[in-house]
Length: 286
Image 1 (cartoon, helix red, strand yellow):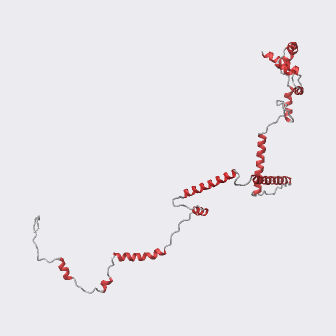
Image 2 (cartoon, one colour):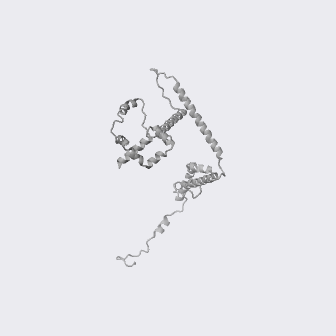
Image 3 (cartoon, rainbow, N blue to C red):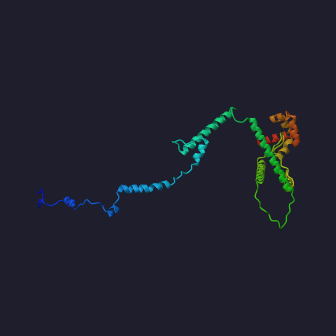
């Protein structure tokens, strides 16, 4: 009898077990045809059948091609293969580094005359280029003259046909524009060259319509009472006093060269009169 039970149970020694009952019902007979047809497959056989079905699908499926990398193809043609640890940026920087290095080497050789073309050949090339440009400019100028000389026919029924500018027309237009720009620059930056000994403060000479407008103004010239006129009127009275004084200006007037006298004679002022005026003006300022 089991312990710790509230209601103890009795032992049934004579009761048959489940194993004994099943053994009695089980019969060792040959399996029927229906049992063989309806026999269930195991899990492993099912997996094998599934694998066998997927094999032809895998064989028929085509592999996807990798997209072409044109950068790597071109670098490989040039002799730069991508290394295992290199990205595309690193490969490009390596190519740039090698090219700069080779260019610097060639420049250094050319500097010391070890490589490159000779200076004479380069000068000859520039000469031929200049000649070609000169010939083309001459031909363009001839074409312009011919076009100007053509008679213009203004017909009322003529229709202006617009056409595209060719290569030569564009070159002519470009040359014309550069020529006009150079002429404008020359006019803006032009400097008046005054020869040695000439006066730079001479009054302008007008002609044409400007002269007609300026003539009335020139008619009134010399009518104002200037201080210099008064001093010139008093100058004869003080001739005796001025003759005694020997200033640096008198010395300069006496020891003046022939070229200075000639220049003054051109202006039309007597040197003595000029000195008198200067002295009178200085005395007035004092």
